[in-house]
Image 1 (cartoon, rainbow, N blue to C red):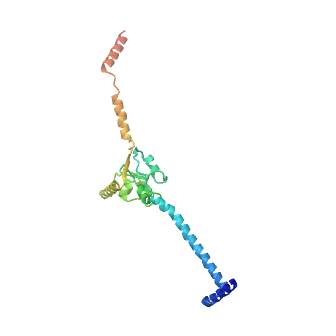
Image 2: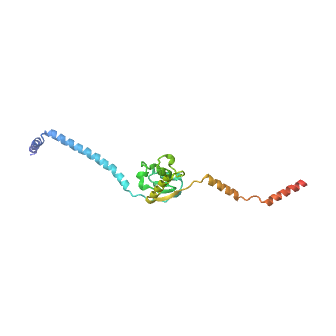
Image 3: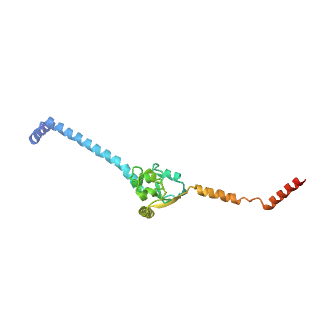
Length: 205
């Protein structure tokens, strides 16, 4: 019975495909192999994309208020450490821009602004290292207007989490020194007068 079925199958293969049974089964095995290879490629691609999609869908941690920090302390929030929030500052005001990591995080178009007060660079739309500072002295009216627009955008979109601690300038230090010197009581005129009288008496003797 099995032999009769095999003979019938061979005749059907030859009749419908025009191929010998050996050639037919060889092509069939090749097609199955190609199918498995293609399925494996698409399957691995999906597996690689799934963790990334899950990572993007994870909710962001609520912004943490930092208070007043120095510019050096702000640098640790430039996105290189994924455990820290992504921060940047405008005009001394620090904002949490973690929700826009694709722009300000590592590899993003504005990544060099992260962890810094980029006021001057934003005003001039500059990507030069010398402009990555909060110093906005000498800017023109158009640049100041552009900076104001950036500030409004950040205020409306991101949460303010702190301010940059201003460094003590030489002028302030000199003023404090002068004030301290003024606070020291000077020698009274009465004491000086007594010392002068005593010196005169010694000479007369």
